[in-house]
Amino acid sequence: MAAPEAWSPASWRSKDIAQGVDYPDREHLTKVLSKIGTLPPLVTPAEIERLRYQLAAVQKNEAFLLHAGDCAESFDACTHENISNKIGLILTFSLILIWGARLPVVRIGRIAGQYAKPRSSKMEKVGDREVLSFRGDNVNGLDANDRTPDPERLLSAYFHSTTTLNHVRSLLTSGFASLHHPREWSLSHVRSPSLRKEFEAIVTNLSDALDFSRTIGVESGPSFEQGGGRGTVGEVDFYTSHEGLMLEYEQALTRAFPLPRERTSKSKKPISASETPKAFYNTSAHFLWIGDRTRQITGAHVEYFRGIRNPIGIKVGPSMGKGEIVRLLDIVNPLKEPGRVTLITRYGAGKIAEHLAGHIAEVRESGHPVIWICDPMHGNTHTSASGLKTRNFSTIISELTQCLRIHAQCDSRLGGVSLEFTGELNEEGFSVTECVGGSMELSEAELGLRYQSFCDPRLNFEQSLDVAFLISNYFQK
Ligand code: PEP
Ligand code: MN
Image (cartoon, rainbow, N blue to C red):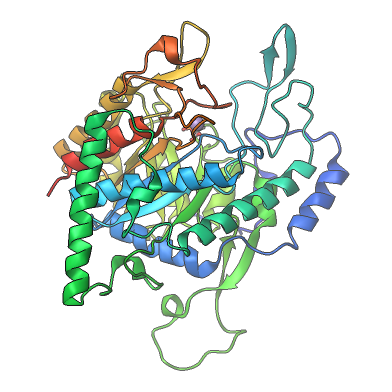
């Protein structure tokens, strides 16, 4: 096989760029990018390495991965309430999983940078006007009069990401995630009495278990969270992610850092800074994924992703041709390192049976270590009679349960889920109404009540807990 061409943070520029943005003022773009290139990293190599370590544990069936958050964040939704509701929901969801499956949960939010959106067409109709499609807050505005791509939005995305991440970090280090009072994550608005009862039962059992551990003095033993970092009861690891779509932005935040010592040499002999091998880390998020529309083997996105040290995701849909996954894996993970690649399947409830088993067999045959996770959202979107984009809860569950079954039949294991959900509440404290069904039995007629997404429809708080209990019961030990 021919040696791969040299990689650099900019080598993607010579490839075909799917979903590229045409900036009318390229000089302005260059100026903004060089400014971003001087700004500090958002996340550190040590955190990225810890995530790789924990994902390798997921791959060995020793942990479960929860990847969740908004389809797209917006600058306006960057508020204390929205961020804390989102983190609260992720923590609640993961607690339900931990309790049922008795496995650590690796939490990766679609947060602190999930602004750019791929679109199926360049133009869209707004009223009777044909305008450029909305590409996410880091490119252009939702307002039909604000669709010209503006490079300043990339800088604004950087600062909104940092402020979001700063708030997440402060919440998590100030007791918000403490298992001693998970009731504070707010279940007050959950209407379904059975959901509330189920969750309260977990909390009561957990409080008893914590009291007991405290009494006998074993509260802070070594934990999975350590993976080379901190980790005590009541403090959790949390990671950020977004789709690595805007390669100009990703390049500007790609920085060379020395590889951690234990990965470079087993010898105790001191090595000088100049001898330490370096790797390129994307410092805008811990985890990045390649979308279903940008995973062309010879395209720019795959080229960029192959050179970064971060753990990455690849969306796998029904259009993934025979042999294509393995060709992608050979490019992005030639050394077959565990924890490096997560395959996020999103076929749709009607198509998963046709594709998943074959994909599992191909990957197994290749010897590539991967984590399989199920995204039961993106293959199951449709337009309701009223014209709102929605997803049916029962279809989401159908893809998820088929996915669990097919993995079991193939002697494989589902390592996690990727969900679009939100803990967002309106001013009166009600959840959003974007997906139909669930234990709250949301009807199509109710969709218009509190439809807040400007991108894909998200599960609300109650519907998300329904999913958490389903998975938790499946893995119940
Ligand atoms: C997404 O995850 O928001 C998305 C656009 O997914 P996909 O690339 O699978 O369509
Ligand atoms: Mn989406």
